[in-house]
Length: 103
Image (tube, rainbow, N blue to C red; front, side, top):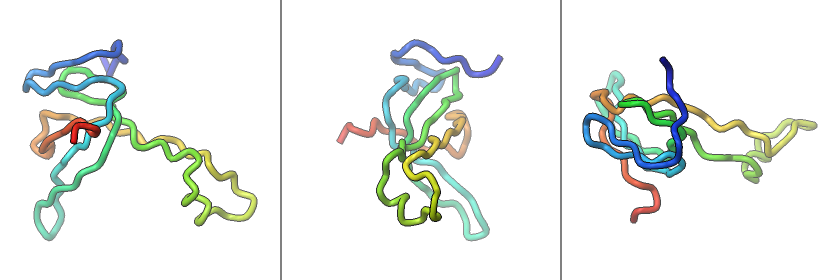
């Protein structure tokens, strides 16, 4: 069926977590490597919700002056596609999410 883009609004999944399309959240995920399991946190914007699946957008880096530091001569600077990710919040590697501007 795939992820459908719902109308802006609150969406509750079976685990009771609520996410609002268009809002940014700080997601804490678990990762594993040869050293063990560790947490990492990153801010993503929710662009779609389908049950336990969230389509997430990374930060908009358009116009970021720090991108100019790595630019090659003649390279167009300031155009940077947003990173996307599908997150299954039913996964054991999903730890938590907090509204980004809810300090």
